Structures are given as C-alpha cells and as structure tokens.
Length: 241
Image 1: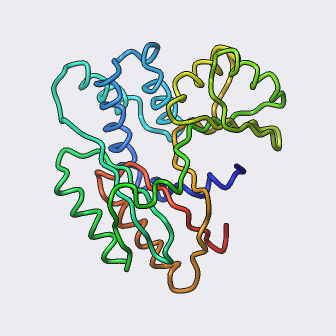
Image 2: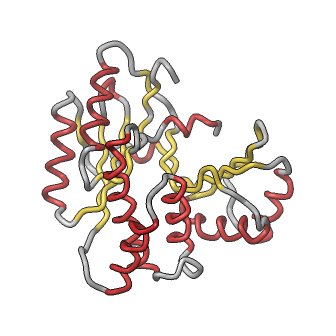
C-alpha cells in the first residue's frame, strides 16, 4: 500500500494555536471510547491506543484524565458518530468523520465548508467504496517474518505488511484493530508505535492543481476549525507530495 497513507489524512495540529482544538477532539474521543468500552485501558484496547496517541501528540495528562473521569461518572455529553462524504476541490474524494451532540448543526457546518469551496457533499456511500477502512500500525523493526507470525498465531487477518528503512508497517481491516494491537504488544513487549490508528486509505488518487490547491487548503482549514470534526480523509495528490 506504500507510505502514501501518511499524506491522505489531514493533520489537526498544524499550528500551536490549533493545540486546544486537538485537546478537545482527543478529549471527546477518549470520553466516548471510555463510555462505550470501559474506563480501564487494560481492558479497553481502543482506549489504550487513543491514550498512547494523545500522549504522542502532547495532549496533557489532565485532559486525558478528565475525559476518563467524566465517562466513569456517567454524566456528560452524549455524542454520536457522523460521517459525511463528497467531492472536494479538484474533484478529489473526501470523507469527514465527526462526533456530535447535534447532528443537524454538524451537517450544516460541514455542508457549508463544501459549498464555500466549490465542493459537493454527497449521500452516505458516495465515495467510501473507493477507500479501504484499515487499521495501520507503524513501528521500528526489521523482522517482518516474526511480526507476521505473531499476528497469524493470534488469528489476525493481515491485509499487508511492509518493511522499509527500518520501519515495519502493518495493515489490517479496521475490525481487526484491537486484536492486532493486542497481538503486537504481547509479542513485542517494548514496541513503540509511530502510527497506531484506523484510517480510510484511498484506492486511487486525484491530482489537485492550480487554483484548486488554495481552495483545497481553505476547505481543510474550514473543516478543521469545526469542533465536531475528528478526522478528514481524502485522495488528493498535491504537487509537493
């Protein structure tokens, strides 16, 4: 699948002033994971992965603990996932994942980002079939055979495994995330994930050129400014990538 996946997900933390939004997004996601799967990271592998990812993104411990405490107390907001699909500037394909306590507001906000940038929001399934919904694990290592063996012994469905420049990349279906993570952390006690998450990986890419480039940047900025937006996935191929 190649390393192109790294360019297909919009980063939420482009500037220092965006950090508070990153904290809020992580806090919301950690709260929902703890509320649905339990507040103990040892028993909730999705939560453990989120916490590890948050720490790598320099989210303060008190933000993480507050979200877990809120879930433990049983009170708090009731968020639900919402996914929007469509075509962005240059006719690239886009998937926007949200957590919202007001679906009507969120849809209106996301639709505005599409319409203000000459883009077109579609119905569910419009572009999702052109992406693979995958769990991705990247970590330092050389022995891909040992990694593959550990995953197979745990009965994990491995889509692909790569070994490049001293880094191993494992792709599995998104539904295998928890089982794959547990298998890797059990087999390799000192494993440190550089990437540990679920993404939508495009099956094809769309070149975005000329005037569409600043429009694409505006589109992503408008979406990233929305508190309800958690992740943006796309298949845009920009000239500097």
